[in-house]
Length: 237
Image 1 (cartoon, rainbow, N blue to C red):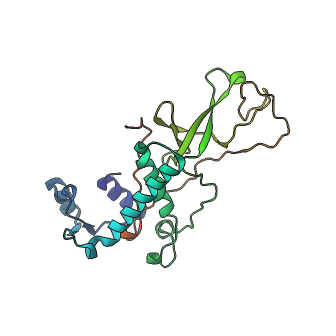
Image 2: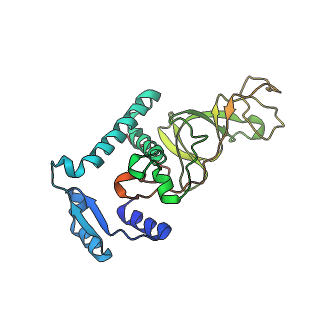
Image 3: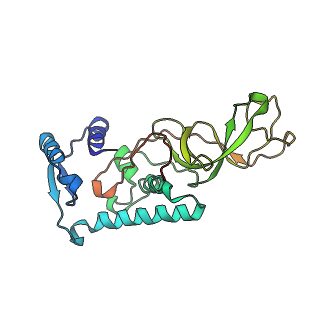
């Protein structure tokens, strides 16, 4: 999400104008176009001095913590390093829904929306999932394995990473855990080649849909992280 898009989101959804923007002296914040935009919007820009931890220490520490956790998740599930961005987005998603002393024990999500976050049913990042493959018709459905990497914020879908294609797509109905065999007349479940219908046997699966959750916006900016929502895309190397 670009700064202009975030600025518009805050104004539309919260009725708030950004009056002060604190940044470091990175070139992206000092370009003529960006500085001119801030002036046109009446936003005062405050810059931190380089190598001054006291002025930017909180944000630098937070960024480092988020990056380290994202890297740790990649290692834990054994997914490739080019999914680092997706791992970091999930860390931010969780961070926005955790209580913080800076907000007197509230979560950033609550500070923005006024609602308590619901973390029930949040999958483990990188979890193995199964998707219906209906290309061969209803009677010949098979389970295609993938990895869950995110909720899609613009739909009720999920971001799924396909190891064989090294790409990410948005899928609607996903199944967590091992796929289960079903009767050919059933409208649900997956039929696995070479297996008999499961009948009344317990099913080791959990199917969930992405919740209707708005993207958090900062209050103040140093206390909340806002993930960038990007469309489904091929994963870059």
